[in-house]
Image 1 (cartoon, one colour):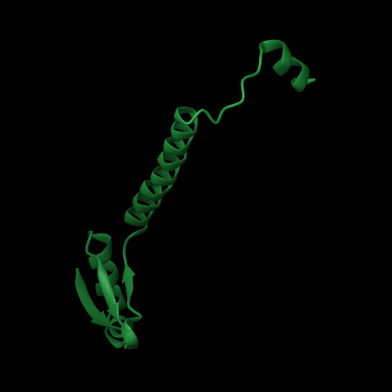
Image 2 (cartoon, one colour; image 1 turned 45 degrees about the vertical axis):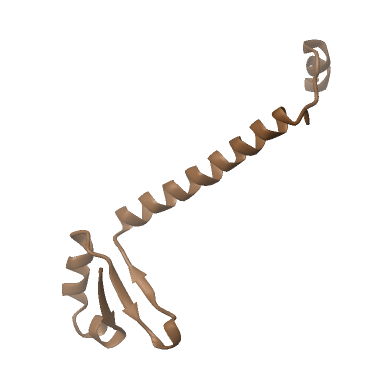
Length: 85
């Protein structure tokens, strides 16, 4: 990861864009540690997919714990069919 100032990004955006598209991550240093990170769309999409997967797995873990704790509702096929009508 390379760190640049906002002015550096403005002055040489094409070079910075090329770096990002080759996999480099760029930290934009800002006052009061309000820093930003630039990364490629491909990397962003991968991170977003991983985040969504983690949320999904957390829901599955919660459901498994509910079953283990006995917090379930049992229905017969007939009851489900009536509910579907």
